[in-house]
Length: 224
Image (cartoon, rainbow, N blue to C red; front, side, top):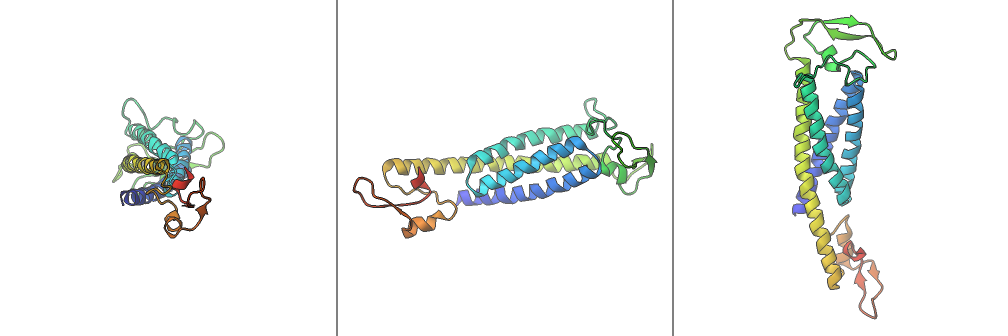
């Protein structure tokens, strides 16, 4: 029961995390933020691998997702410091664009309620963009929007880290129980994965007898 609840929670969390990562990727593309684009791409790939590992009972993929969750928290803390200009960082720098454009973020250039002006493009022929007029007053600063996005990512990543650690521990316990059952000669463990429990319980897929013994049913633990 704990395995099912943990897996279901991690699957739902990864799905929501994937949606938020895709949303962030779209706005980073529109804002020509090349470093976040690469980071988001890696993040999306790891989320998909984490989903695959959770559904298919692959602990190594879940471990990789858990480690990446810690890295993702660190990255988003840096993004918050960058846009809030903490620790000597400045959002006017071209650190996130590889110095290929003057764009800072889509939110900074299109946030409603702020005055904008056209600025010339620079770099590899990027189309003309917009920037806030110096001294413009906004209802909510665009840098705060970026910080809120990163804060949401940190919250989801922390939850994913906790769920990932729990799921890995459950998978490890199930594998240990399978190994114990196999070493004891029972051939049947308590871990029924991918619907194999039906074949174990119904007696389908029997293996040849060992040294004249009775046939042993095939199942997830019988593979050990």
